Length: 439
Ligand code: 4AD
Ligand code: MG
Image (cartoon, rainbow, N blue to C red; front, side, top):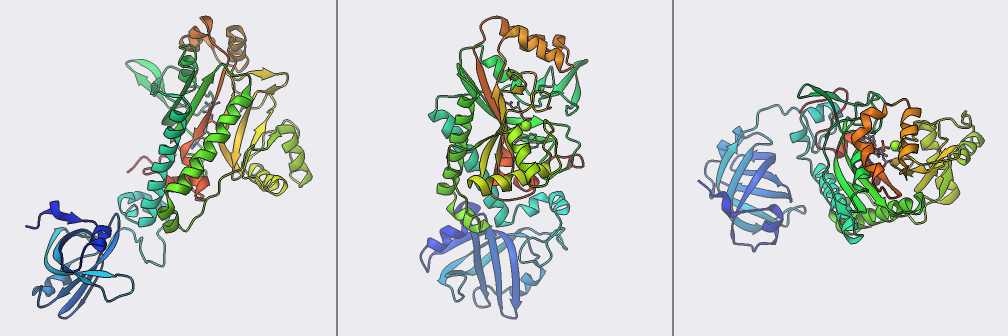
């Protein structure tokens, strides 16, 4: 038996000396048997390596004709300098074991195949789909984006929280809640950390953030909606206005993109992508101004009407042309629009919040919150909700709640926008939507 303890990765073997005995293990990407000579391209998470089988070192070459692509093997032999352009070194195999043989045909193809397998079939076989080095690159960048968020908030004095996901009320209202039975009572899967991060403002922690799962029973099957997504939620107390919230959003977006640019050079090269850091300050465009811009460009939209996805994308193009900006804040929404939630502070006829639009699509929604108990109760009623369902949320507002504000930020959307990947499902390991609960 060849011990796996001595296993080197392909990139380590590439750095080892010619003549050294090396063990490699991984997936069989290609097999070519030519009589007394055979080649296998082996793949692991660091890259590919050529295994060469010569009759004099490895008498049982015929055995390789049984081997199937994507099987797992371990091979041992001496390193030699390679003869092909692609591989500067190769392994002259003297011992090989098949650790797990893959069935044929493979349910999907992902490498060097002209016909790309459809997304749904790829997601059905996600483990196999993720063997594609391009997919690994996406998830390495994802890891760095999360690391950048943690670094940013640590540097800026925020405290990380973990709040419940089994909750007493749907924070964002509407029909997009998953209802469940909780020891005989009605409960919900968290729609956002909203109510908890606000309650945290009454504790004196002052600045909090969390990345956690959020669940939304989204019926719309779009490229950017999931039923479960990674939600960054941020809240800060003792702010002067919503502008203080927007400034944090600007700095955070710059920090993450810069971090990816610096720390993901290899991954970006694999994906053949470049990223550019947006310039601050991001333009602030009022809803009224946005509607006028759209009307001017021929879109049929009324004042105080919601801007739909198509309008939003069009607006992105207009703003890019006018200001050269990839990111901007859409502000001053008419209070009657759905985006203005009961917990927002109102200013005349508009809400004191915004959507941060990035690459023509919504990345965040944030606002100054209403911290006055009586006004908050009034707004809950106005939105057709029952204050009795919010008793435990409202309670802290009676005992010293500072002015505060914050935002919610879709991490999966961020990744898809930064990398220019249209479908959000590509940047999530096991996406959930109306049609998918497996794998
Ligand atoms: O805009 P949303 O619904 O805002 C909130 O959750 C508020 N609590 C935020 C606040 O502090 N006022 O969600 C925040 C972000 C969106 O901007 C979007 O990026 C992402 O979460 N998001 C989704 N991502 C994937 N799939 C979905 N179904 C999403 N719904 C929202
Ligand atoms: Mg929103």
